[in-house]
Image (cartoon, rainbow, N blue to C red):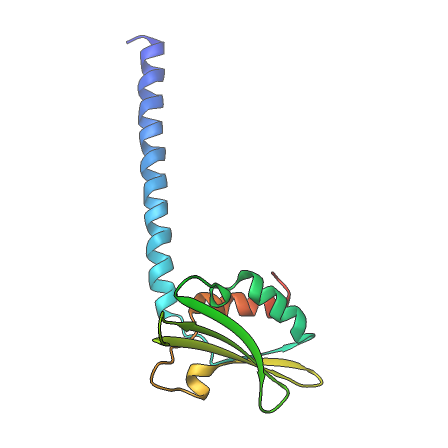
Amino acid sequence: MKARERRQKFADRLSKLVGIFLILLVLLVLALQTTVLSAVPFPKSLSFQGSHEDFVVCFEEHAKLAVTDGVTSYRRDVTQPENRIRLIQVKGFLGPSASRVIFIDTNEEGYRIVDGFFEAPHGKSRPVRKYDWLIGWLCGTGNL
């Protein structure tokens, strides 16, 4: 066997192993993404220091909760008491079929975000997505 043929066989085996490794790595990431997010418990509320306005701007820029389309609408309003901001996503074409709510309670030291599903549930309420909780935590800590 010539040296060139040996190098070619080695390159073929190496490229096949690298390809298999990359496919297995992608499958592992996909498996972890679905199982880890479903197994990790997320809190019902988070407290942060700083300005709640910066949080709202960051959250509205990155979160799926703030996405709108023909079926999903989003709005922000102030509820009673006056130090509570409500971020709400409503899904439904003619009438609401599901809603997700995050409350932002402001105070002198900082602010606290609360999942409306656990605080004020109703028949059509849904918990906030774990992805949005992660975005909320990243925005609250200033990492995003």
